[in-house]
Image (cartoon, rainbow, N blue to C red):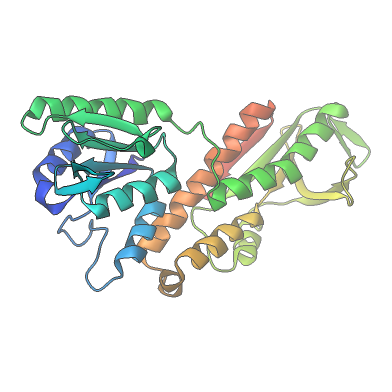
Length: 312
């Protein structure tokens, strides 16, 4: 089972706390601390733009924890108060905006007073002088993240594309089969029908060519049918297997993932870096997760199989 990726951000002065938090979480998550010095795991690389790296990190990770410690004295509305470093607060805002409030948490020293703007965020207080306090607060965040699961449909490009694909192809095929108690082809009616959706392990630049190669693994015939409310007929490939009519589709709509990420990270797109490929892989998994969730919600999960090409 692939561990979800988790990002820890803190001031460099509090690396010991960050390391302790990482130790607590590493059994359940693939954890990276923002200033790891190991080249292969570091989020921020030498000679790269800080903001560009932050944006990249927010796309690579499933969860984020920002650690707030007593780093700076500031005046807020005439009152002197302790506050975490500005960059930690900036990262908290960025990750919360990207991941959502259920996927991002603020692990914060109990002596820090926060303005009301932080209401609604997941806050876990700790006593910096008490190791047990840090561990217990981290465990509470861990439990929250593990409970959150994948039950949210968000607006990452993959989730949006999966929703469009679901509404425009999967729903019409499934409803047509249900309404007609099967599907008729070549003067024969098949009550047993399945829809197989084949998703590649990775996205090439030419997705159409990629799917044509995958399609060559099957002997299929194309069928078309009119679905109420659609301006044109729906066309899909089929094969007969074990007295079952199998619809087979290769969702070329996923090329939109490549397009969206290339606009967010244009420099990495040009060189197809490991970080870029990592984000693409994550988005493909999001595409599949969103599809499966929508299928369950729509009651079509028993009619549709979503497979990776490695499972063929």
